[in-house]
Every structure is written in C-alpha cells, then in structure tokens.
Image (cartoon, rainbow, N blue to C red; front, side):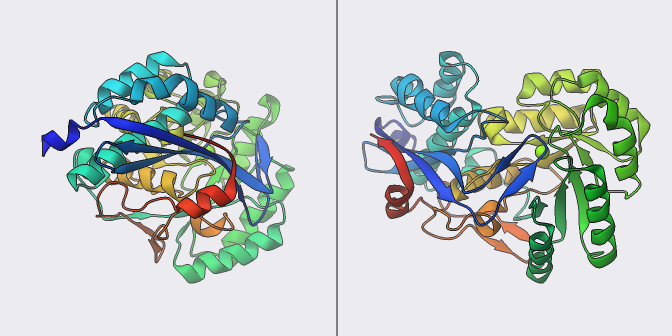
Length: 376
Ligand SMILES: [Mg+2]
C-alpha cells in the first residue's frame, strides 16, 4: 500500500472562481454580495488519481483570491511537482517557509494532498488525520442579511430543516438593530440556540456597554467583539461577563493560540483551516486550546463544498472541537455549489463522509463555468 504513495505528483491545476450568492451578508468588518471568490486546486498523481483543495479568502479578513492564486501558482507549485504523494508533512513544512501568510493557499494544498493520498490508499481524510470521533457535526447558520425580513424567512426554513444553532452577526449597523433582532429571535424562534459574532465590529469606547447588553440575552458565546490586535480589551471584556468570549480574528495558527491563552483573551476559539493554514495545524490549535481549558468551534469563511469537506474531516478527527460547525454556505448561501455530489446536511447535522479522500470531487464543468482565471 505504501508503494502507491511513492508515486509522484505530476500536475497542478488552478481555477479562480466567482460563485454567485443568493443574498448580501454584512459582517462587522465588511460586506459580501454578488459573488464570493475562491481558488480551487487539483493535484494529479502518476497513476491518474486526483486530489482537490479550496482556498476561500476574504479580502478584509484573511487575504485576497489573487494572493491565494499567486501563492499556489508561483511559490508552492515548485514544492509539489515531482514530489511523492506521501510527502505531505515535508511539503507543508517547506510551504510554511516558502511564502509568508497566505494561509488559505496552504489550507488548499494540505487538503489536496490529503484528498490525493486518501483516494490512492482508499481511506477517508479523517482516517489519515488519526481517526474519527464523531459521525455528524451540529450545523450553525449565520444570520447576517442586511434585509432582516429575508433572514426571518431563512430562520423559518432553518427551523423546518432541523437546524438548531444560529449565529447572529452584529455590529455592522446600530446597536438598536442588534438588540431588536435578539429580542425577536428570543420571542419568535425560542428553539434556536443563539451565538453572537461581531467580527471585530465594535469601537473601543462602545465595546463594554454593548457587550454587556448583548450578554443579557445569554447567548452560547460572544465572538470577536473588537479588533483582532486588541488583546488587552478582549481580556477585559472577558472578565466583565459570564457569557463565554470567543476569539476568531485574533487567533490564526498555533502560535496565536499560545499567546491568546497566556494573555487570557478568550474562553474559546473559532478554528478555521483557512486561518491555520492546513488541517493538521487546525488540529494543533484545538489541542492547545483544550490544554488551556478553552473551548473550540468549527468556523469557516465564505466557502464552497470542497472547503466544507476538508473542515468536516478535520473536525471529525478532532474531539476538542465541541461547539459544532458553520459549514452552511453550500446549502444556504451559494446559488450553486461546485461539488459533483451535494455536501450532506441532514436534520441540522453535517454528515461526515466515509468514502476515500474528501468523499466528493469538484464538478469539472462547474469549475470551467465559474472560472475567471485558470492555469495548469
Ligand atoms: Mg467569526
């Protein structure tokens, strides 16, 4: 079996896609509307097997699709072509030093290498990451439409679909709008467990009173109320309320997690493969958090199904991530996902795939249809 993983990687293809979305979404630091842009990576091995990965950047948060594309096309491609399929950790170690940041590109590469190795060895990616601790993951859907009437219709659909978790995006309009929405949700949608995410939206002088107001609604947690670099303010806010405070933009990889834990800025962390720069590094963030007694949540970016699958396998293999996941975009945000077979969500649970590799492939026709740029 190992002999198969000795085979060389002979091709890397890239697509920069613009995927139309069904609505605008406002977050504290910016808006997405019209389309979201991702980069899809395909590796091909000597025997013809393929592995897929997705980079899902957001310019105001992690970086740009142009940077992800360039990182893969120019700086990471030479580390991959001609290498053995089984050399994943060596390739990722070199990738970390070949180009700074560009964590979404590295996540795509890690995912594609795992998908390829899984396809060849007939194992799911979760098995390559150490095994599986769960078969399903509770799904959270974000409530972030500037048109709240449309979000009320979405919440009615989510309730009918059996989704039990929602995350209200706050801090992009005025405080009264946030409180009005929390009151309406508590009154008309008591079935939902509610989380709140500011995406850094609060200014320094307004953070304390607004977080205390929102905490009165007893959400499961309040995520990243202030700017990523405001570690001291995060720590102060954490001390003012018994509602758990989550770090998202403040923590990318394991190194940030160590600092966040030492400085006491959070009770938990949103873990995303697009921030950590790969699936193994995401697992490391979760283990550092747990070692410090901190909770972990499976966050995501504006992703399509390939990235959802990579995150799903990572969480399936990471018992420390206990707060569910937010892989809702393929089902509730994109006009059309890019997978050949749909990303599976049933009764509010993401289903962990058991097939080889990621468990589904990108549809070649959709890649060509939505491509704004490609190379191979
Ligand atoms: Mg967040």
